[in-house]
Image (cartoon, rainbow, N blue to C red; front, side):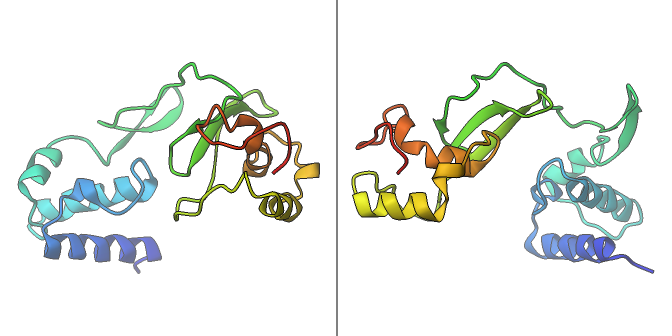
Length: 175
């Protein structure tokens, strides 16, 4: 009996075959279990003669991408670059990332966490509009936002970091 995951992977591979997309460009998040399972299934189907690889896929299917092994007691993907911890500047918001802004902070377990926040649909930050600032602060309960590991904390303190982020009308206030 096929699981929901099996059906999703099969439908994904069918659509990719129809569109002549590379399996490396599958729609699942790079590095996710589904990403690797899709590549694993494409390899299996190719060996059975049921999957026509693109030119890129032919080389990709010769690797171990999509396979896993144990390393230092951890289940790790093969032929996939591993993300290493790097030195980052803590508590210093920056522009970019999947949202408008991001910052690295340490959580309660002393692990580094990346916090992202900010609308990416085209809305503008209205620091110069006093009514908008007041409404934002009330909506987000900025007066109680004290956890640095949340987007709310950093969104509420955006005016303080306005100059650093290239925004005008900032200051030492909650919105």
